[in-house]
Length: 272
View 1 (cartoon, rainbow, N blue to C red):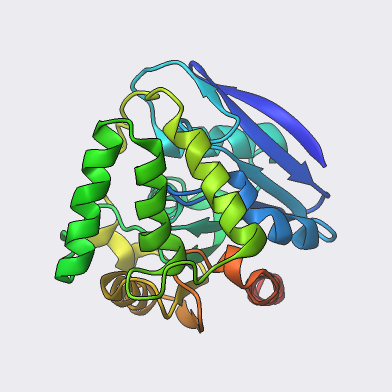
View 2 (view 1 turned 120 degrees about the vertical axis):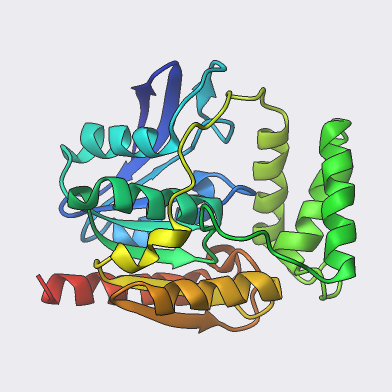
């Protein structure tokens, strides 16, 4: 594995690269960093160029506060590592929203999408059950007060265990890594404002690249519904549900997620 620091504006984006060949770029969730893709990177990197990077405000990326574009950061990584070759983007949650926006703005740079519980910029605000709304409110207070321990505990309930599951459902390395990734992110200074316009929701029908959307069946009901909506709205979309997982299937069911991604990559290759 090669570890790089890629300069974009006033940020140095921590980036890992494994293998060579067709680029596969991994974009992490808001409650994780590039390490959430560890299993997938090792496997996919045996036959392709697997690339994972930390966005501003996460992991090992160092960024001075400034207005910036998360989409432009992604394109900078792709150009720096893969010479701008068209990539398959594998993205989770907030990373999914960036991947969708990037595909709309730079269609020549993307030849396929794998989206796990994707955010969709410009989508209507979700409504949630009372318990979820309470957790979201408490999380906002904890983060505003820099109460890292409380914030991590609530994030774990919402996004790792699932808000309607028993506390501590997910154990072992997945839980340890989740806590560590969030402790790092919560300890970093704000990187400034992402200025990307929220364009995706009203333009999903313009997307013509092969698109696989996945979601854990223990994730928030609104996110499951939105994931199915994305798969149905793009021109070449399919949906795959991951059982017994919440918002981060790549941590909970790494082998299954890797297998599904690998199958999609081969499908895209056969359609070229």
